[in-house]
Image (tube, rainbow, N blue to C red):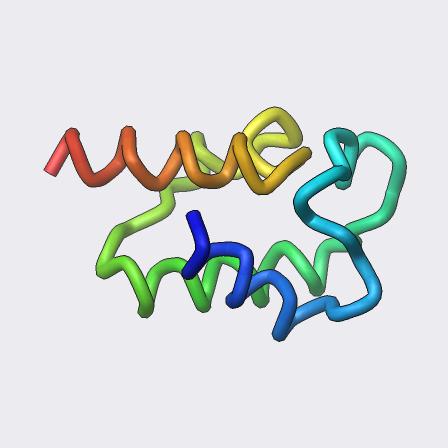
Length: 76
């Protein structure tokens, strides 16, 4: 989780990812942010994030993103 928070902080240092739980629903993250996050997560964790995984639910919080990463890693 620490590595994820570091990645997210590099993309958007103005957001407290430890507290936010509605990043997509409230428009805190825009589509460019999501593309950047997906790109970084793909490279850092060596995972493939599918179109089906690109939901607001998976990107509304750092915890949700972490759970998605773990799930994808378990599937591989």
